[in-house]
Image 1 (tube, one colour):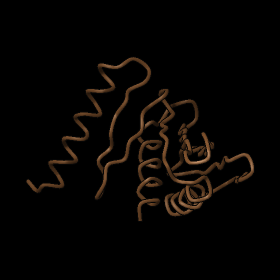
Image 2 (tube, one colour):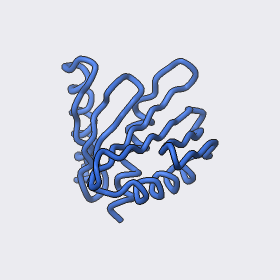
Image 3 (spheres, helix red, strand yellow):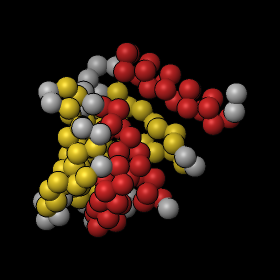
Image 4 (spheres, one colour):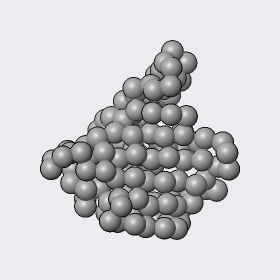
Length: 133
C-alpha cells in the first residue's frame, strides 16, 4: 500500500475512534494534502476551527471552494455567512472574527433533517488548504 493510502486509512480510523469515544464534541486533526488542518466537530452537523488568517482571506478561499464543489446560493459578506448546495447537501459557511489576528470558520452541513458532518469536514479542510496555497 502506498504511503498516501495508509495516511488516509489511519486518518479515517482516528476519526471514527474519536467520534465513538467522545461525547458531542470530538477534537480531531485532519491530515489532508501536504499539511495538517486542525478543527473539531461541535455538533452532529457542524465542524469548526480557528485560524490566524484574516477574515477576507478566509472568505475568498471559502467562496472559491464552495463554487468548485457546488453552487453558492446566498452570500452575505457583511454578516460573514454564505450558503451553498453541494451534492444535494445544504451547507452554511460562517466566518467570524475572534480578534484582529484570528478568525473562526464554522461549516454546517445537512441534507433535509439529516446531519452530514463528513461534508462539513471536507469543506472545512478544503478551505483551510486553499488558504495555505
